[in-house]
Length: 293
Ligand SMILES: [Fe+2]
Image (tube, rainbow, N blue to C red):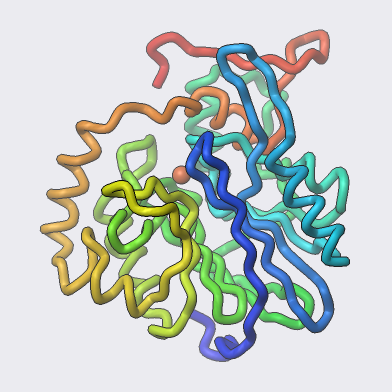
């Protein structure tokens, strides 16, 4: 954590829940300058029909316009496997820079092979405008922000801390939801435990915004908690659970999980910063590698 970070700066945070993928995207804004960032926007897909639409991103764009905000950043906490990114669509309409963790290159290397991409698919992260390393700083208007590299779910995962608001990506879920799975290529339960410990070392009052919620036990969908609440009661890592306990539980649990419904289209699009790949004639097209994952 950067020692000089101002945790008293309070951005306004608005969550947008996508019921199709249980993803929460955010608009984070500086009330003083009206600058804003978008975190983890969604592009909609009817995979059975091969149809892509933009209703989820349009809602965020309308919100940004209605509030007179100026978009500076579109942040991906990681290469998502359960939804397609709306980043380029939003950037096209509102500008801003698309940023992701620098370890995206590892993810591109892995899935470049899985999808047998040709040499035209760059594995250097150049599809993104900014590649963040651990501890990098930036700002949203006058609100300072920094990044934490939090591998475990994927190698390129990052938590972004903007003023007093931290965006968990797929590290922690709500306290009753626990933590993210670690069985994708490049994932590691040991690493996720260590990453989560770093996140939990943030000040207790820090607001923590979650990337997914499934309403366990039928409770209402929720996405805001605090570091203090997570430390006290997260069912996977709270109340002093040891690394050994976590790794055992996480590994056994992951072995029973099925693949996310949209993993095949999501990876192909998201490793390209949200651009849909094209065939040799330039038509947008998605592949299904048989027994490739
Ligand atoms: Fe994820």
